[in-house]
Image (cartoon, rainbow, N blue to C red; front, side):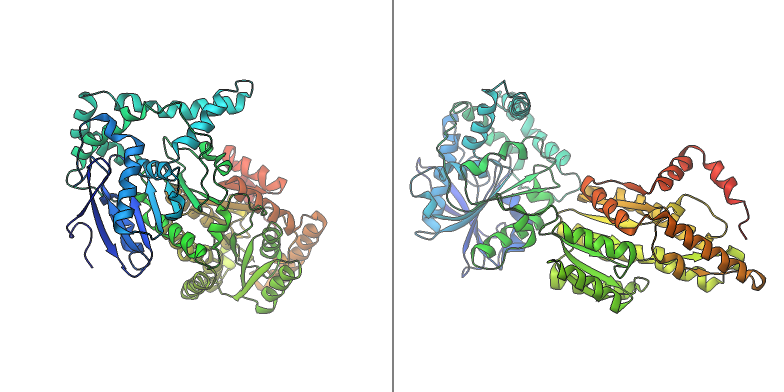
Length: 585
């Protein structure tokens, strides 16, 4: 199969005689998917997306007038959205006569498709439309100008003013001679590098010249400013995709879109304006899920979340994985997410306990899948992640909670016991992050990871050396990983509980010299009573975890003493070190 760059273009004549270069690839026996680009690109913009969709669709790309191998008309009037819509119409009529097409469009290419959809009969020719960072000028304009006409609604007015101000870049782009000269000198190339640093760049050899030639779109736009049509209704299924970091197109400008588009899905992704370059896998997945659903397959969780007007709970259509879910904080966290609509993957080394957790969720009307897992076994965790993702999809939220307690001075703790604590408490978190974080990054739609540490992470205690070390390592590991995952839109929260009434004290392994074993066990009994009298249950930690995910908190101490010690660790660390010297046994 030839790529578009290898294949010679086929030319289609538009209504005013402009010749449009088209390129076909993919599976000729599959439904047609037409890809339209915007400024300053050519059909090459889609080079990262095409291979991901080539088996699913017959793919048709084309160069807008003024770009690539298409004609470069001289008059500004030849670059209105109506003319670009004529080009789109010419392409589908010539290459797919009488056959409905699916459309994926970006920037002004998307705007021109919206323009086409305002025409009589157009909605019989388009089966679905995925619009990427390119709103309808009618809908976007009506939303902005409608709000600006109501200054007595200050919040909406200010928001609309901000959206309108982002469009003022049209002015310098419309300056003759100077603006085209800057584009030929590489300004558009540098703009894309700022928008999507480090992403692959899909540009043709004529990119800088194309950027200069197609700038005429902007002065042509001034002829339609303020002429937004309020009766531009679109009945076909539409999904919009907007980058959170897009400097121009904002989701706020699309909040009223359902007034004109009743069958609407909206997605926001962690990307800039040129997401076809930086996130091709996200766009390919979105189109596939959308078209598959329209063909009768069950909607993916991501698509269900995107559906406008669909009622759901906060974590509805969300998959959450929780380790150590057989009891305590893990079980309560799973139950808390289930109460807010999430589907759960619960795992624990204790098969009976984790199945009981899943049964409790099911009895309350939720959905849970139970797995037996030893988080200290890196290969087992990787197999677990592969199985979960194959059966249920990549979890949107991953809670690495599984852990064990340990008490005893370092010199009294056997090496194998010290290593065991590190393998479970630190290794379990690392294994979970390694298995799922890479899949979240590859998926490209963000997500959230929760690593459960402890107040012990920042409170040195001579009788809990191994435990404190493992939790401090989780704390620092999480800080490092949080910074690494930020660019992918993946949040990470470190949870630091204090004194919480779970069975961890009862199951904590205690290492002590033979003459102090009785004293150690007596001390354990005292601590168990303290925890019980404290009456701070794991359900409160679970509530804090759910809240931290919602608010994307980086560090979340839980319990008053955890907050107090956290503050001391930051402003008076020596006080904690001095307190640790007191002998308890």
